[in-house]
Length: 175
Image (tube, rainbow, N blue to C red; front, side):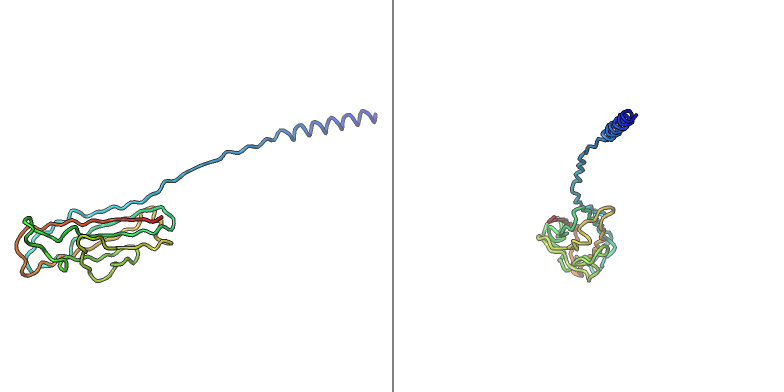
């Protein structure tokens, strides 16, 4: 009887060991690369002034600027410049930079944010906004949106003509 009991115990132990060996584990590596996002969208253009005469100021025009980035703690800079003065088709007359200014409202406290109107720099990009990397470097979702208000004052001695110009916006990141 004792041998039979020992045999039953031995079979039970081996059966228990065999069942414990049924657990097998494995791993799978997951890679999910997320691409960089760095965009700027402009809205509100082209800007068409109507009814301007010498001595009049128009501050009703604006440009919307939206910046989106997913670079964590990125240091990005927004620059703007006018390619030339507002010049007529013959390039003999122009509206001075002091008469074409801008200011901004919106996200952050950029260089020109909520300040007195500043004249555009001609031919060279000037810093318009520098982000705060820790809080604004990563601007996913809707992004950061600025409204650049344009002010055009026609000098009292300005010659009649169709004056044109181009503003160039440059967004640069140093991730």
